[in-house]
Length: 286
Image (cartoon, rainbow, N blue to C red; front, top):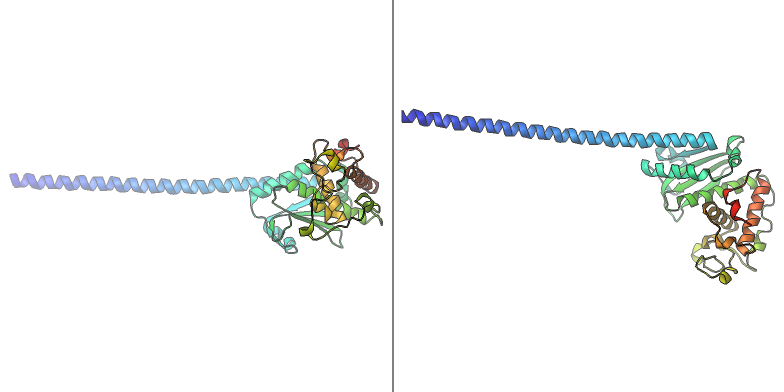
């Protein structure tokens, strides 16, 4: 009888061990299944977010095209355009989303009729969003023989200002097609004997406005940035970009200063050569 009892006890231990092993195995399987499921759900969630961002990008791109006649592109579809400049394609949906929204808000600062250039004529404007340039550029603007304007904008902290700078180049291309002599008196608003310098490494702060300088010191300034001294067209584009960004009257706009006189000449040339309404910064000009 003692021998049978021992045999029965051994059978019970084996049974318990078998049941325990099954429970552990099932638990592991369930946990792994849940982990896989959660990972799959996370992937679907991420895809859903990307899909929503992409749809929002398309919404704003269509809105800008319909309201302003301007085309915006990014990603692989811009490859053929970007191949002509030394830049890298913008693939990031979220960065593109932010840049497109900035452009949409920036366009509201312009007189509505300025966009008739792209809506009701043979001219067109295509903006390519790039991640970066391989040189020191932040943005570029160009025009070909078919009257197609192109703008290339990188994801820079000064993205909106760069947009306004390049948009002025577009406006100037347009005016130059219609007027033989633009800004014929431009150099008379610069210091006597001054010459522009294309080599940016040679540019200095001489004649450049500083908000930290005294009013007396700024009486002898003619340029808003060092880059303004590269060429007349960059000088004008820098002034225009700064004006498009202001929300208060800056010191350089004080009546009678060299820069104020130069800016008024610039804006009058625009109004005389393009039939458009007033820019938002007109309230800050004397």
